[in-house]
Length: 147
Image (cartoon, rainbow, N blue to C red):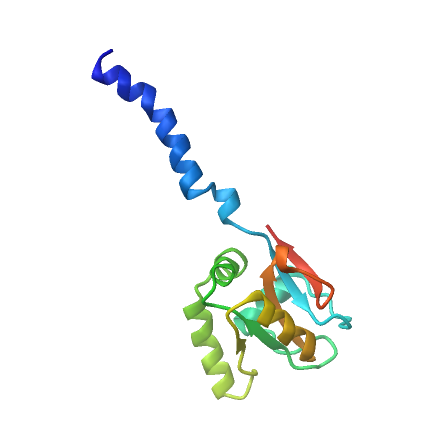
């Protein structure tokens, strides 16, 4: 068998092996649940969620201040900012620094896990956060799911 024929025969096998090691794009991208407290009556649209997380909407429909519960340094955080907001966490953070310093918004609460985000959202009135959909439980209420 020639070298060229061997390479041609091995390429599909190598591609399959790389896919198994690296994972497919579908498995690397988890579903995201945007959450509020379990007793919240709020049901924001995707556009309103984006407005809240980029700082252009700082109150709920009833006038309650929005409290962002964030996890910008996690994989789900990076995915949320990219897929939902179309921005980097750094860009959104810069906007929030300006809003907080001017008194227009509350400082986002930052955590490093879904469990911490769920606990914070469940206990803080007016809060909204995001977690991996696989972490969703009855302690919070899902208002939006992003694939």
